[in-house]
Length: 388
Image 1 (cartoon, helix red, strand yellow):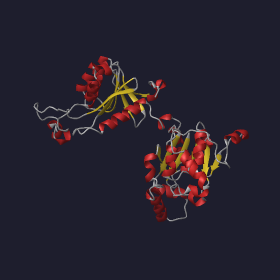
Image 2: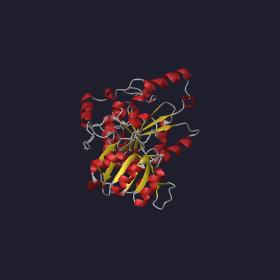
Image 3: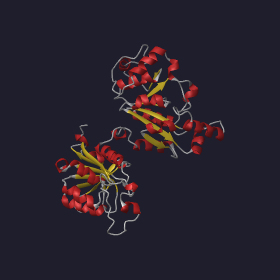
Image 4: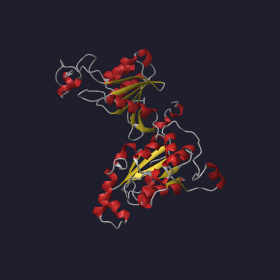
């Protein structure tokens, strides 16, 4: 694993780096940066100015592809080689490199070891590493006044705020705001003590592979949520993914039937009324996401499948799900008829599970009629059988 830490001044970046080195056995990766740039986490710096031009160009080209995992030796002189590291028979706490391409080559060839750095400063550089499946980007922040007190800075508060603005919103390629979409784990350090911060870092379980690679439930539920974005129903957006043997059979989202005006264009009077009770003559004409997924697949392809839906199925869909032979339903958001649907699923022997992506947990409706949810670890279900 290779962890890069970015964050605002006084938010605890270097403190957490030291913790990972001293308590978790990580090796520090350092870049040969000027001292004035090492103090500012989001400063812009041209790493290539300190290395030979042909060396930097060749290495940059070699690492453009995520699929490049060759073990080409580092250009001479190498800061440290695998052979020399093995011969020392000592724990190396810090390794210094001349530029990011050397770091990328080294950590790729030694990806089973654990490394940490606070020296990746720009989006361009971080994007070189984000393609690797063992790379994690941690972002730290905290209350501004608390960070000012922690920094023990001789500069005024006004100057500190100006510096903070520059770090957050300065040059896009090196601003924290410009790198926000690359972050895997965010930490707000408002803890009263360093031990409390350490305890929080341990609770994050950074070695958990779910931080970098979703398990099947998270993967399919994310796709269901993505499918819901295609919906133009005026009441709610719902997406569904029908899965069989961990392979997607079909997808669906709610909306009016094919050839009928879209719901948001007035195709469904009931959905556009803003009221549930408008008379028996105005039934909803929208197909639900689950219905569309089932219709798209057909019964022969549905049997013994799992249906992922970002919202718990209503009774109308529950009946059809049971009838088509679905064995398991996984949902995220609750709906007004959750209990009624759960009872019907239980009677028909269909397993119903709630998945909460934010908590990385699963809740299960047991088939014994007791519908109080109990949490179980989501990796305990069938993670061992993952093949993709």
